[in-house]
Length: 361
Image (cartoon, rainbow, N blue to C red; front, side):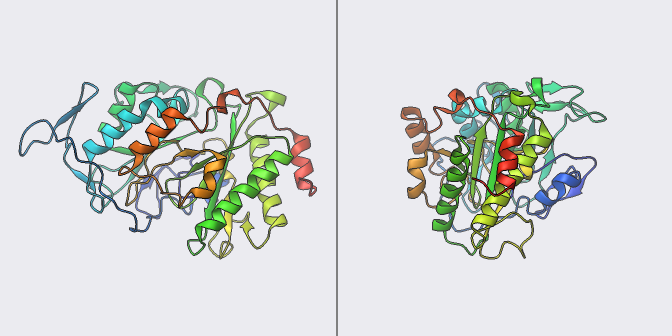
């Protein structure tokens, strides 16, 4: 997918013009498709029932008691989304979003001039720290502290500082060497129909279920789907190398079992009429767009958890946007599709990885 994969040192320019900290060798291949622009097909206008607070030419507003500057600045011309619309969404979504953010190192995609300007990737604390954001010293040796968003105040301040996308690690800061989930990003050739994505997600779920693992699904907010496998931290001594090896073995199992549908090899030449199973989100320092997080691309798609019995009725990875997300949040409040997530206690092992590598399912 086009999410940020980051285990960086220094700076580099992504394909969309986002200035990002450059990934290490393990994550470099995964970031080459980072943050591509989505087509402008679905650009329904975001709700505008609220106006900025300071008059006809006012540029400030207030959300959760925090002053929002440049509130009326349009950040996505196609949908007409203003900065204030984005901040208000994140504040409304906080009850569902914060459980996915708390205690996890987070990377930000910031757009000070909106989607048509330069995008900046931020993983570490800046010279002027963002108010309310937790700083974690020593987790990334040789670099400033990593960040986490642990409260509504921090979330609103981050978006006030022009962040649009929020990407989280696969481990919490308190146990940074113990991944507590595996993420498989199903990234399709744009020429493929959505029905191929539905089938691909179902096949991935079946392979994981045959290994005794329960998986969860969410839209990416872009082109594809994310398959998330929760893990018990430290179970069987699982570390980052184990997580990467297992995720790679799943990707290769899908590619070998259904070679006309999947590839486990990065690059557009390998992905023609196929779905790339991106497993490199499972290295130390890599990150994935957070559930209920907005994507920095035209249309302002949102990554939304879904139940498996909803998958067949989905219409695309950016099905939910700022224009229609409130109805989805109301549905989630009545029936959370990931209500079982915290109750799942499972682990991976070298035996499972070997079984996959030897062709078993």
